Image 1 (tube, one colour):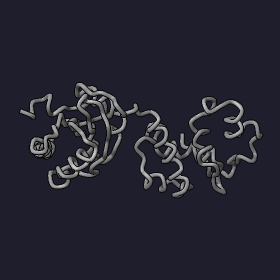
Image 2 (cartoon, rainbow, N blue to C red):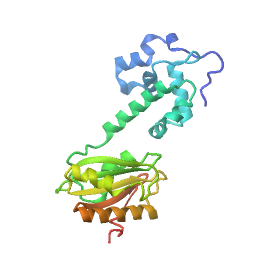
Image 3 (cartoon, one colour):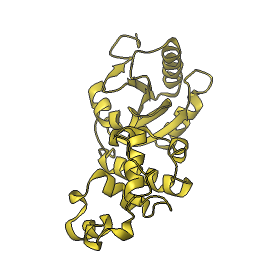
Image 4 (cartoon, rainbow, N blue to C red):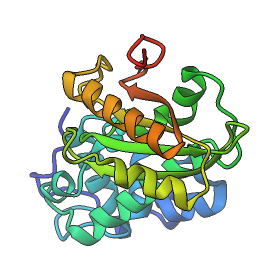
Length: 234
């Protein structure tokens, strides 16, 4: 049911006993004791003249769909919600990004031996993006990750993902090899002709420079596709 704040009977935080307010409950019992709405209310800090921070948090979750919807929500989408200005929206997005980064596995010196290793490391970072992100992992002679860069954001084609961007950074990091990845926002990791063309161009450049392109892995929603494993490197 949609939160009903039109009757004029909306309970404001000042009307709630202090011990039951989200921040006070969090201070007393810890964050795990709070509901999703209460946690969001703590981030929002204030509501509007018409509704409390708690009511605003509940309505925000209702309009987004559920808590999972926050993973891919944009600044523009948040600020279309009545009562959520840019300051509140940026605070929410910053909190989400910190949580996402904490959840990511550490990359430094992680060894990758297979496409699954690559997908395990990068799946959660890439699967929810609503635009394509082209990412390079730079490896040493032991196939350990020594660096990562997002080279391009947007629709993939051979004119925008240029070998000089990929291999310039590889040279600066003294990389022995490179693994490229990008996501498909549709969730389907099957490569397009452009994906294959980009891969071929990068492989040829790597051969000239002596820095091997080990693989190009496409990330979908819980699925991945290795162009090397599927025979596109022959």
